[in-house]
Length: 382
Image (cartoon, rainbow, N blue to C red; front, side, top):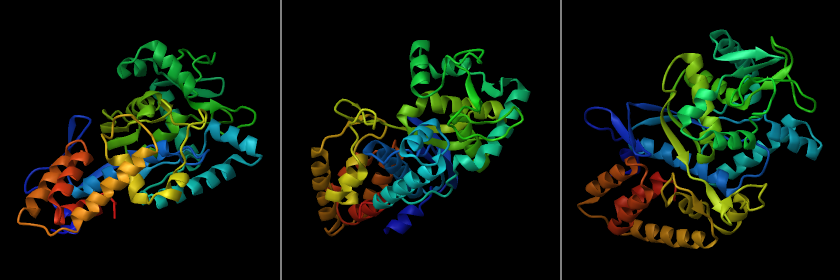
C-alpha cells in the first residue's frame, strides 16, 4: 500500500469519524478548518510554530482518513500590538505587518508547512466587520455608543465556565478593556472601536474607527465558510477570550449553533516554566532551531506528544527527536511483511483517535517496512 492509496482510503459505508479532545465528529468528504493565524508583530518562535505544525498534522491526518480539509488560516494584520511595534520601528503599521508576515511564511516553508487554501487578511475585511457590527446592533446582540459598537458578552463568560476574576484578568491581558466607561458591562467587547490617536482608522456609520479583534476573525471565517465550521483550531491560550467571543458573536449573527462542531486547542509551549513569549524573554526562534537541526527533527519534537497538553521546551528534546526519527527511517528501510496492510490500518485508527502520533510512530518503528514508509510521508517527516 502506497501513501497515495492510504490517503484515498474511505470507509465502505457511513461517514468518517475523528476524535478530538475526547469528542467524536463525523465528516463526509470535506472538512472546513478555520485556524487562528498570526498577529504579525514579531519573529516566529517555537510556541507559534507548534500550533501551525499541529494544524498541518491535523490537515494531513484528515487526508489519511479520506477527508479533504479546506483550511482557512487568517492573518490579523490590524491590531494594537502591531501599531505599537510599528511606532517603535518608525514605519507604517501595514508595512511592518507585511514584513513580519513574510518572515513567518519563510519559517513555515522551512518547517514544510504548506500554505492554506484561504489566507484572509484583516485589513481587507474592514467593510465586512462594519456590516457585522450593524447586524449585531440591529438584532440587539450589540449596542452603539459614542462612535463604537459593543457586543453584549456577560453570557460568554458564563458559558466558558471560568470565574469572573479569571475572566477579567484574561480580558485585560488580551486587550479587552473591561474598564472602558462606554460599556454597559466589563465583559462587553468592541465590534467596532472608536478612533484613537496613533492607530489606523476607517470610516463607518458610527464615525471613524477600527475593527475589534474578535470581530475580525468572525468576519473572515463567516466570509470564507459561512455561518459554521467543522473544526476551529488555534493555541490553547486563545480559548478565552478570543475563541469564546468569536463563537458567541458568530452564533448571534448567523443564528446557527454551535459555530464550531469541534475545537482543536493546541497545548502551550513553555520555557523556563512560563509560556514562551517575547515579553518574557524566553522565546526560542524557529530560525535558530533550523540552523542546527533538519526540519523533520523539529517537526517530530513538536508532534511526538499529546497535541492538547502543554509542554516544556528543553534543547535535549531535539536530540531525542533526532534519535526517534533515525529509528523511523531505519524501520522504513526494512522489508515489509504480510501484515503491512493491517499495520497501516492500525496506524490510521490511532491517528483518527485524537491524533495519537506517538502510538502510530511506535507501530511504524516496531513493524517497519511499508508501515514506516507510509507514516514518514504522511506526517511530513521525509
